[in-house]
Each structure stands twice: as C-alpha cells, then as structure tokens.
Length: 87
Picture 1 (spheres, one colour):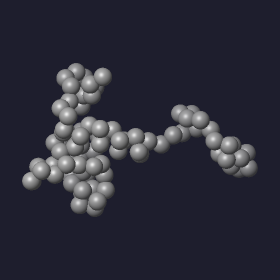
Picture 2 (picture 1 turned 180 degrees about the horizontal axis):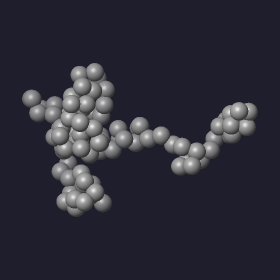
Picture 3 (picture 1 turned 30 degrees about the vertical axis):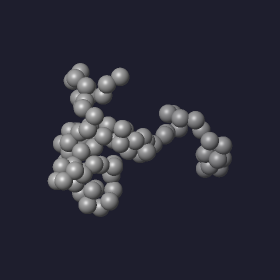
C-alpha cells in the first residue's frame, strides 16, 4: 500500500522525501527536523552534498520507535496490574 503525505492525496510518495515533505509526513515543521539534525536527534537521514533527504522506511521506523501504548491500545503487563491494584 503506497504512503501519501495527506489523507486526501492518493498519489504515491517517492522513495526519498526532501525535508519539507518529510516534516509534513511526521507532522512537524522543517525547522524541527533541522534542529533535531543539529542535536543528533530525530529520524535517520541521507546527506548528499548539501541535499538532505529521508526515506519513508526511516520515517516509519522513527514513528514506530516513538509509539506509546496505552492501557486500551495494547496488552496489559502483569507488573502494570500490580501497580494499578496497589494505587
């Protein structure tokens, strides 16, 4: 299934996205991606000369790494039950 930048857009994304498109894909500003690169944070990127691009796979991996499970969205672990029971 091809990814698209906006929900209303149906055209497939290219394999590599430039900074503005990558920022839209993640829901951040291009400034934030620039700041993260300077700080050594954020998704992996490709630098070719002065050009910065991001692969869809790297952006998806970054999003997956920062996914937070809630009690309702995922399985409850045994220690979480004990913490809630003792609270």
